[in-house]
Length: 285
Length: 266
Image 1 (tube, chains in turn red, yellow):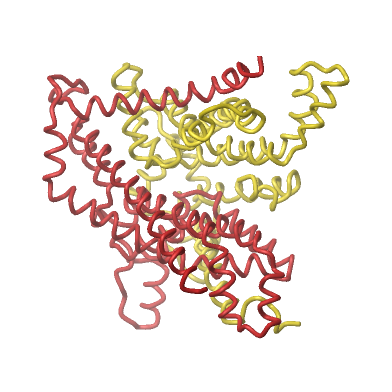
Image 2: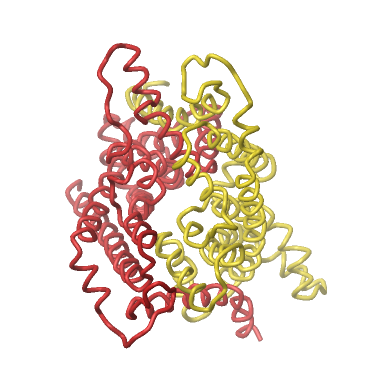
């Protein structure tokens, strides 16, 4: 009786996962088939042709490399900007300040991707706020949007609330008394950070950074709007391919390879971060 | 005492700048939405509501707003119906393969949105349902339910199972004890999970863009195509409306469950 119960409780979630798995199975099957030109139909014996044509396409190779490079850069910037904010938020003695900052973060967080991508478009655009200010001052203007700079700024802005809120949860669990003890024994703030706070925050830091990296890898709307067709991250290349010619098998093969790339990169980042933290902990002793 | 503060003024200054970086763009978009001219001027020359009028006068925006609200209002309760029993099974029972089950439940979150979008596009093409509201609802439910499971699991972990046992000892049925004792205590998790799923569904672009057609679009997809074709602040007006909605939600969360509690359940 008690044994049978969890299965019944799990039935709805298993049904949802089943639909998800069916959709995935379909797209994997389609990726091994051949498109019938001009229709959504696919036909023919199983073939690896889609995969080999994607793997040999210079556009796809560049997109894979650009995606990894840009996502790495975005994650690094998010970490460098987000850590101080999360730390101040976790340790601020002012309850009012903490609440005000949390309100700002959560409202921004919930206001959505389109809102924020559009905000950066009107700030960084060629006739945007920054360039108008520069013009008014008689200074030369810059191309800030429709290139990688704009995309990186936009995505970092998108990821920061996720990162800060995730790291904050971990930092709050580090007892303040540990830091106070170290300070009372004469350690400087910087040493307390390096030897006490940073090592204890590693698990939270790894999950916050992984979350940001996953978000950066799958960035789609920001490169689409702020990249002006010049920034080719994996999601955009897949979308543009399906818009230009509706070759579902080829696009399915692209999506499959992208999924493998993203999961491998995520696993690798987690492994490297944990490994580095282990070495760092050993060196500090 | 200030010398014992955990961070220096320099760190506090950096944190303030980062906070300004996060919040200011959202403030600029509000200025832009009420701005008379078609481009952002500081200080604004004249204030106007014409971009809001423009938004609601546009039949495509009205239709996409309606679709998005219908989709989110369906997906959020659907995800909760999936998540409540799943969270109960994960927290209140021990069974073989539970860790694997947990990884499986969370797996939709690690798949890039575009890949999920392509999968459900293939599924609709294969089984011949076509595109539109129903495929979008199904796809977004399959993608977003882990957020609800996460909120409810965190909520359940904080409850005392002895309350339910006491109700059982006093003669309540299993279902009765759940409905009258446990479910009321799950209100914070239901609210946090429901709001999170609702926002994810109303804001989703990367999955929905593959499943919309010329008749049915969603608000983010319609906004995206408007931004591509027109250069005026109508989308800024829509963004202000979304920001107002999220501000109202945050105030409601704070009154009903407390902001800190919400973030723990997120």
